Length: 106
Image (cartoon, rainbow, N blue to C red; front, side):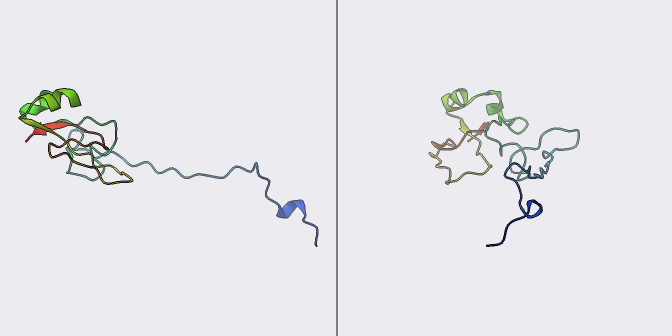
């Protein structure tokens, strides 16, 4: 067996370069976050999002899931991000396995 020279061996501690690509958030004119559905990467694609309801939507006053669920005129806004399994909608816009990202009228 031939001997390996140090120039042909890559030490286990050699750093590996990682490329990170920044993706800008979808915005409307004026720098406001775009509403869900207007862009695949807009509000609603991050698990911590709480998206604004469309202008004039009375359910936009609710700022959390509990308040939205308590109002029978409202439904949850669908999460548009990636999920390993399909989100299971309970028929009221809320799911048991995906986050709710806003509150809109039914």
